[in-house]
Length: 381
Image (tube, rainbow, N blue to C red; front, side, top):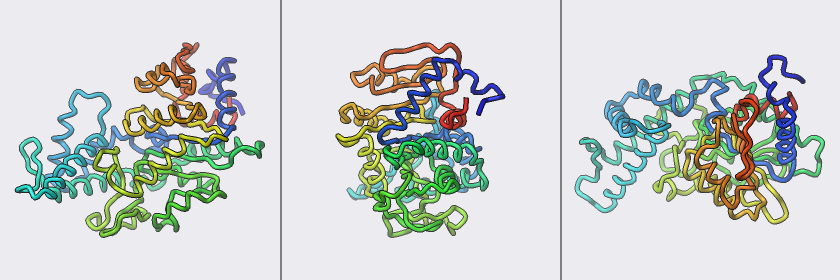
């Protein structure tokens, strides 16, 4: 198939064709891992994390939560790229402080922020309300545009069609709260597990990840808008947002970042992070390649796990970083120039890197565009 509109024209340059062949070769060998960030959901009409704040602030019903969220946002004035996930993380940290003071039986058992006192219960209510608004903002698009996600998973799994000796299963590590990838895999009849048993109503059953007949595993590193926590339970249930009766009795299980508070918790967060960690350390008899899409390397705990995987894998882990920036983000550039840099290839709009070796591209190319890459993986040029 050819690209009549010209969007893929830059990739017809001989140098780029060679790079595409390298990418396809790596993805067809050993274990295949994908890390999908927010940029992969934008193509389906969903808001980026940076765009969620205004929507959430409009939808909040609690004045004190609105005051707190606005106050936290003001502390980030002048920052580069701060989003509602950063603000949520601050509230999580404040709640951890309040909980600690309650355990130590401090007078009041609350924290003060910009002159306003907040109890642990009020901070918990704020988290529940904000997460509910995030869920509603994402879920209100009842018919998201799945075409690109379906094309992507179809082409990824078709790469193995004529390679029976290759490892069958593909792991998708998803940082987004939406269910676009799960919906696309289902529509394409690709068997997968997200760690929950059941159907639209499900329960946490991580042993499902061990099923060797699966073609894919979907590991939601930050939770999901259809994961809820019932009172007096510890593990997620799957409930579509439309079936959640009241946000006060069931809490949306999404985590903006891994703070110390969250890291002390048990499953499912500990389980999904452990899966990510183990996947980045392939066994001595195999290799693995991690393709990174729609991610700007701004999440510290994810970066730590990737770097540790690169160091601990004995050079059996390779990274394909598809960037939408002109040059690699700072964290990625540091890795490229490190002693494990040769394990990394970075494809940017104006540069292609393999370790510390950088080539300036003859023209800007959209390696980091999710829809473009979905087409390229299918052989379209």
